Length: 127
Image (cartoon, rainbow, N blue to C red; front, side, top):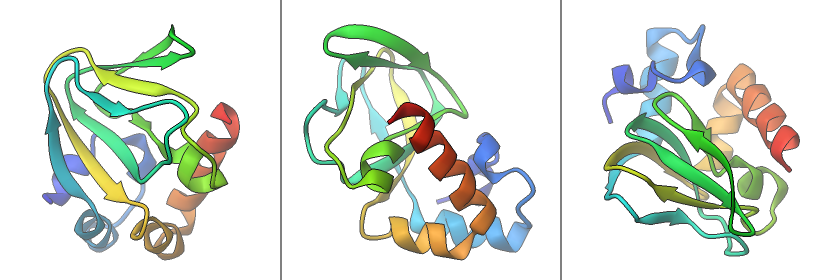
């Protein structure tokens, strides 16, 4: 995917152009339509997402706990902690996201220590 698209995320602040390009190679771009569930609470987690465009709603046990938009991320808790999803995330408008699959996630963490620290801190906060 286009490395410049990832610059919307605070997770990549301070990365060189080369580091960002290597990171972008691990992600794929995806679209979700309004109402699409991108994750479901209690399912196994297979991907981590960065919102590039649009908005999503985060529900825990059918209670809305957050709305996320461009630059925000979700899905890290299940991948970092090896647990099932702790929330359902649905698109509340058409969304464009950067998505990395579980099999590429360890590469992401290994390649970029600062990024790994930021993702792990986020996972700890929302676990």
